Image 1 (cartoon, one colour):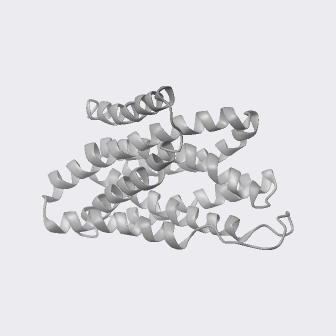
Image 2 (tube, rainbow, N blue to C red):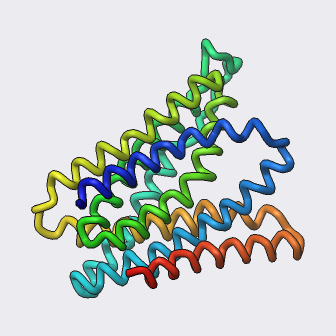
Image 3 (tube, rainbow, N blue to C red):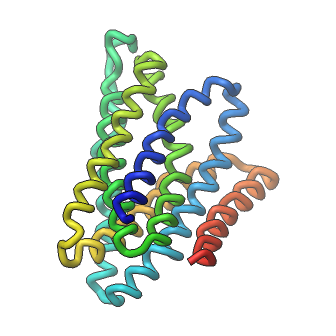
Amino acid sequence: MVWLYTLASVILISLVSFLGVLTFSFSIERLKKILLLLVSFAAGGLLGGAFIHLLPETVAEFGFSVTTSLYVLSGILLFFILEKFIQWRHCHHPTTEAHPHPFAYMNLVGDGVHNLIDGMIIAASYIISIPVGIATTVAVVMHEIPQEMGDFGVLVHGGFSRKKALLMNFLTALTALVGAVFVLLLNGTAGLSAILLPLAAGGFIYIAGSDLIPELHKEIGMKKASLQLVFLVLGIAIMYGLTLLQ
């Protein structure tokens, strides 16, 4: 049952990579408005996933100690390192399909590593319990929707054709399957979930606090701020609501 739920969840997340094609059905201004609301929703989902599901389950299963805190901090540092070293690179050649800019390839590498970790986190969550796995999957999906739409735009901007950008985005998404299978095969390894769950919580906190919420501050105005707050709280509320199903 754990294998079935995990693989189904990872495949669902991989299919989210195709949502990038929807970016071309909106005007730039409308797209920006939609993306920022999705970013708010994703931030709430990630914070809710970390503080309402992953951390409480970690404490319930393995207790709370300095080691747990260090794993959470390690998760934050891990995602800091990924973001720091896999980033935009400058290139002086014109961007064409024959010569995509290096940042497009770097984006693919970073996305692949990120999805690999997502797959590992989801598998570890399902090993703890089905409800925790579902909650983690929902949190990841919330984050992946705006991210994948953004990644698709980066690849097209970097010189890939739309068809190739969709294909490459999907292939990097499949690394989540590799991470999930790896963890499931190591299911009997003592303490694996005790490491991955707080690491995941740290990663979720970092993404929400460092990547998503700062994006929301780029727009000012009471109406926009209020909408962002509503969607942020909605993301948290949904994660809380999932606890009522347990």
